[in-house]
Structure formats: C-alpha cells, structure tokens
Image (cartoon, rainbow, N blue to C red; front, side):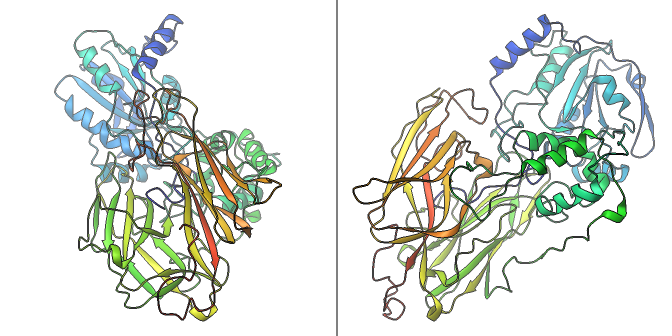
Amino acid sequence: MGHGVFRMRIWFLLAGLIHPLVVASTVWFSVAAAQAETAGDPVLGRQVADFSLRDFRGKLHTLADYQDRQVVVVYFMGTECPLAKIYGPRVQEIASEFAAADVKVLAVNANVQDSLAELESFARLHGLEYPILKDLNYKVADLFGASRTPQVFVLDRLRKIRYYGRIDAQFTFGSGVGLAQPQKQRQDLAIAIRQLLDGKPVSVPATVARGCLIGRAREPQPDSPVTYSRQISRLIQRRCLGCHRTGQIAPFAMTDYEEVAGWGEMIAEVVREQRMPPWHANPEHGKFANENRLSKAEKQLIYTWVENGCPRGDPADLPAPRKFQEGWFLPREPDVVVALPRVEKIKPAGVENYRYIEVDPGFQEDKWIALAECKPGNRAVVHHIIVYVRPPRKTTGDRRRRNTNRRGLVFLAGFAPGTRPLAPPQGWARKVEAGSRFVFQMHYTPIGTSQTDRSSIGLLFADKETITHRVVTSAAVNHRFEIPRREANHRVVARKTFRRDTYLFSLFPHMHMRGKSFRYVLLYPGQQKKWEVLLDVPRFDFNWQNAYELTEPKLIPKGSVLHCTAYFDNSAGNLANPDPEQTVRWGDQTWEEMMIGYMHTGIPIVPGELRDGSGKPAVPDAGE
C-alpha cells in the first residue's frame, strides 16, 4: 500500500515467531558484562569437563580430542529455528577464518525434535564442514547451561568458559519478525576468539543469546486434563496450520506430535509474551472479521499442556487431518495470471532492499477486479508482495527499476505470510484502466542459502453490470514530520475529510521500525461533535502489520473527518531502532519512517459511470 508494507506478517516463527530485531548498543552490553562479572557470573571462568558425543554420521567426538587447540567454540544449534538457519553458514565462515589459528568449532544439537537425518540434510544444504554432534539426552546442553539456539560458548586452553551468548549483534528476538540490521554490528564471537588468541581478556564476556528454546523432552503427566490428541491438535489446526505445514512460510511443520512437543516450551513463551498469534488491536474498540486472538481458555490449554510435560494422550482422540487448498485461495482458478517477467535471485544472508518490478498485463480495455491474490513463487523467502497499478498516463518504458518513481501508483493487492485475499463485499470491485501497468513491490528475506523466486498475481474479473461500489484505497498521510533523536514518544497526526458518503470496510495503519502506536478516530459532521474510535493499536509491530477488516461495512457520512494519531519511539530503548542518534524523516527505507493511515472503502456507483466510456467516475474518489 502506498510505499509501505501490506499486512506485513511474515511470517514469523510459530505462525510467525522468531523476531530478528536490532539489539541494544555495545555500551549496554559492556555495562551488563561488567555487572555480571562483579556479581560473580556462575558461567564465566567455569571449567568444562570432558564430554563425548557422536555426529550424525556416527563418529565419536570428545572434547579431549582437541586438547591441542588454543580455543574451542561450542555452538548450540537447531535445524528449524530461523536464527539458527542464518547463523549456521555464518559460524562456518568463522570456523574457516580461524581454522589455521588453533581454533576448533563444535556444533551441538540437543533438540529432541531434530533427527539425525535432518542434521545431515542441514549440513549438506548449508555446506557446513564443522562437526555437528547429537546430544540425545541434552546432557552436554545441561553441562554448559545452554538454553537457546543459536548460542555459543568459547573455551580457552584450560577449557574454561571465557565468553558465552550471541554470535553477533545483527539479529535479536523480540516483538516482531523479519528485521535485521544491514550489517552484522558487533561481532562478539569473532572478537572474543581474537582476544583470547592474543592473550587478552575478553572485553565483553557475556551477551544475551536470542533465539529458540532448546527442545527438551519432559516426563508427561499421565493424568493431565489436556493432551495433544484431545485439545492441542485441534487448537493447532485452527490457529497454526495455515502457515506451519509443508510448503508454507513457517520454518517447520506442526502436523505431528513429536514436532509440536519439541517446540512446546517455545509455544508457551510466545503465547505468554503475546507474540503469537499476531494481533494488535485493542479489543475495546471496533469489531473485526479477521480477528486473530487466542481466548483466555485457549491460552490456558497451552500452558497446562506444557506444564504437564506435553502429554500425547490417546491417538484415537485425534481429529481428522485438516485439508487445505494448496493452489490459489481464490474461489476458482484466476481469469488472468500476471507473473514477474523473470526469475529473481535472493542472496543467502543480509538485508534485501525492496525491489520494484514493472509488468504489462496487456489490458486493452478497462477491467473490473472482484478479487486479486498475490501468490509467492517461493514462500520461504517472500516476506511480502504489494502490487500497484500505474495508470496509462504514468506509464514508463522501464520494466525493471529498483527505485522507480512511484507517484500516481494505485494499490491493487498484497500478500504477507498467513494472509488471504482481501475480499470486499459482494458487488464491490476495483477498476483498472486499459493500458495500465502493474508494479510489483517485492520484499525478500534471506534464509541462509541462495534462493530464487518468480511470484505472480491472479485476478478474478467482475461483470460490470453487477457492480454496486467501486473499491478505492485511500489514506490519511503526514509526510512532513521530524522525529527528534532519542525521543521516545513523538506524536504525529494526519487527517482526512470525506467529501461524500463512503463505506469503510478495512483499516491498515503503517509505520516503520520506530512505530509505537496508532489510532483512528472519526469525528462525525454536525453540531454534536461526536467522536468514535474506529481502531486502536497500542503496540504497533512493523513485522506484523495487519489489515483490520470490519465485520460489516461502515457508512462514513459526508463531511466526517478521520483523525489518525501515531507515536514513534526513536530512543535506545526501542530495540528495533536502527540509530537513536539520528533525526528521522519520511522515507521509503525501513530505517526512515512513514505515517500512513490506509483505508479500504467502497464508493457507490452513480448512474452512467459504467456506461459513459470515459473510464472515470462521475464523482471524486474518496482519496481525491
């Protein structure tokens, strides 16, 4: 939408769970490390006893095998955690860099849900050469006190722990998904290794490891009132399988007991911290057809199940498998499919800037679009798609421009993991003029290996004789703002006046990484000055931006004024903040900001509009 992101859910771990956000400053970690040492950190300086584990090929490895090495790095990893996928190849880079410098890297997998076959596949896929050892009873994880993946422990020649925590500061784990600093930031692991090789103390010996909890098996309580077979499997079918199944964006499938039980504690954590499911509207205002919120009873089912050791229960109680439409979510095959003109290549790591790719759909006459669905060609890497229409008067001959002029673009459709096509009421449709071109905004998320994609959009045309409302996406926008550096609660407002009766059916607030909260308030015309809060998002999340679809279209009388109020956090306390020392203004990039209160509306068709041949409505759009 506009220049921003449409329903940016990406995906996420556990229907969108892991969140790579920007971490706090190096100064903070230095202070934290100093405090840990003065407080007598029980991990730092502890000597690790010898241990032995077999790798996925069956070869036995012991810590004593590498007694000639000056430094040993023990890296706890997983095969499905999104951060572990990214850091697997990154640790290989570090292992190769220090291979000739008396340094050995040992990877340990303690996840009960990760099989030996999965370890072998993971190593082959990512080209990993360091040993990957299977910790079948997580005894080594317990020996180190490891709790998450990825997490590293650096041992000196005496095999004492001199550093533990994260690998570098590029990613973290918080309230959003899919964000990362463009650079690796502080490379804690590499710095610790170099300092030990130089005979120096590690300057920052402890950092916080952000990632997935290690999946440990627990003793199930046989008398648990909640079991996987009876309650949890059904809850997962309702809430998670849209994304957590083979071929979808989630990093692992939740279609069998062993897998779900291995993630049990992680599921409880993200539910308790309200990271899952991703829904941020204040329940006191508005009623929404697509509300995605767990009830207190559903949350308690999860907590009880995990507290009782994730019991399986009687397999006879399992529900029938849920069936999904694996092609289009449209009610029938599209009338037209418009694809990217060529295959797009996605790098294995780092940050992918938005790509703007122009395509000619070949429309020789005006088209009315009843439904449109953006379909990712590679769900593993497509963070979101937005397709705009460039009317013919704005057409340019350049089919592929990364920073193309986007003035005059009109929103058509969008995709983010877990979303479905935005379906307006019956008889409502969007108009696309003859000669228009489509502009695909593509946002890709690297997953640790090189990937390709060729996404597309499918269209269902409407019979113009049945159309009652023209669908228009408009917005209350403020381009002229400055967010001061270090300001934690900066207010920005925008207003929109409705010049004719309009029907509202969906709201979509949009900001970037400093976005804090967003509220839509409608002031009705007349002397009463009646106010109504249409939508309140008290905790905005750039990674999980939703379109909030009203249960029923709402009539907005002519003369009404929509007030949108946004707050931004440009302080160091905002872990997603790229740089709290910068004054922030409007811009397309995520380290810049936007303030847009989008709305999807329906404008009643007036007599003659569909037959006058002008290609223009007889009255202004809601956005004009």
